[in-house]
Image (cartoon, rainbow, N blue to C red; front, side, top):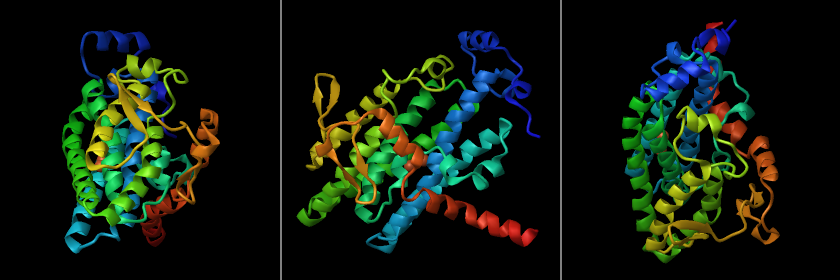
Length: 316
Ligand SMILES: [Fe+2]
Ligand SMILES: [Fe+2]
């Protein structure tokens, strides 16, 4: 039987608050309360699952690399993502989670990565747009954790992750810029942005008026709220897209970024198309779509679990 969070985390909530108020980091279970442990497990799982699923998603698109050395760059990004996932799962292992069951025995629908990765990347154009948009989202989220996290082992590990994400981003931007110089390629880049930009806006989750961050901010699992993170992402992405001449539905108004299309909106995942004519929808409907997962969920998770399963079958 795996021990409960109450058995693993010996401190009271007040003791954790006092520890943090002293400016100290949490270094392991010995410094944690049950609430702290539950919260840090949740955010680590989301992060590790996101890194892990990006590997099959990017690998699928890497098959469309224009040349062998471009395929090599894509594979090196995939390798980084697997190492990032490994950091998260290892830390979860230290926090009393059965790592192997978490990775290899979980139902596909129980994985906690953003819905965007459930929509297939079907071309090199979509892969480099994912590097420019999704890796930028990952970068914004992880730099916030790097800055604000009170969990020492993760905070330190993220110094390396941040640098690698910068490389992924640069890969995306360099290619987007290059492809935009040719009108035919540019049209394909624009088409990728058309469905991927709004999906990345969703990545940051419910708006602040719908979501209480309470303990996440108090215990320093993150420093910024969902809307602040969404703003930080737009501040990076929108000016870049304007610079290369790709249209995205957002613009600056003073120091804020404003979304120009109905948001959140209904999405046709098979056609990879937003049904913007139908106007904005409620977040409840979005959460239902997220919960139902998208087209690639089962396929990607099966791909990640398959090798382990056949190895276990041979060993049995
Ligand atoms: Fe990563
Ligand atoms: Fe990345």
